[in-house]
Image (cartoon, rainbow over all chains, first blue to last red):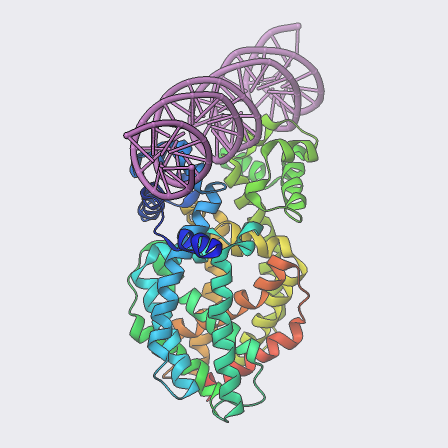
Length: 203
Length: 203
DNA sequence: ATGGGTAAGTAAATATTACTCACTAAGGTA
DNA sequence: TACCTTAGTGAGTAATATTTACTTACCCAT
């Protein structure tokens, strides 16, 4: 009963102020980079006072991490829903590449935070958001290993290296879009990337 | 005569204070991320006053860009010296991958700045440092195009995509080292990466 | 119903820190 | 000598992230 109470408390929808603050930052980041956004900016666009930010977030960075976490949650669900029906490993990995690229492209704020804004501070790697990244990253590795075991992927390929190439390619491909707002034909680009990667990785 | 004077002025070795400031930031960044380093920190480790920083640099970020530029200059020279003797495109690209990875690995501060600290602010893309990046990036593209023309690389490969995969792979591969200080066997990793990339890209 | 506890939110003070400005000292040069 | 330029100083200022003491509203157990 005790734990049930605490549990419902954890799961219940966050207070409106908290939501408003997170949305405000997300919105502001469509135009500005994180460091150029002030706590005053955030508070006014959220329609709350500056002090409230520090009721729900340890500091400004913590707010950023929680916003990222929110975006990553929906991203992760989307990814999982896309690959669960597929059988072949190569196919799964291709879908991950295309879907990730598409997600970054559709939600540039999400991509911006993940690729440009958080990695420079050590605290990020202790955050819940980074835990999500680890899960996503782990998923890819598992699929690669499965692919090797089932003979779809060459067994002289280093799984970690393949994952690095995949993730690196995806990230670098959308950098231009995220930074300069260039348009990106995700279907075409992901096809090119898959072409390069798998004509080597596929046995 | 006017312009000659100005020219020698530009080329002559920078004042000791400027050098000390740049070295100080570089040194501090071996331990801390850029945002956690204060101008006071920089001044004291450099043994100058805070005001002097703003004599030579527009702002704190500009200092960072100039430090990056310095590192990139030596990096670029190193790269060029490594590939100029080689004939084959694939070979050149392989060397670039290995050498870049090695450079990042040896000079973590350089890698840290380039990959984690500058890309989030728009000003960076107006800086001299970014001009250097463009040159480096252009070099790779030229080699790829040459490789395609000479039949070393498949002609259905998109040159930009191949470059993205290359650069992305390199960067992602050294991220763990740069962030967490993990050791990296550059020879092995670059071999793995080349293996993945070129078994598809090589005709 | 009511009063005590807790969650949501406020307003103003504080402390850090990037950046400015008016100044000095030391060459070099005409 | 007088002057100009360059290197450097040190005390400020202004912006802004964070803290603190306080108010209000609501829930639930007596």
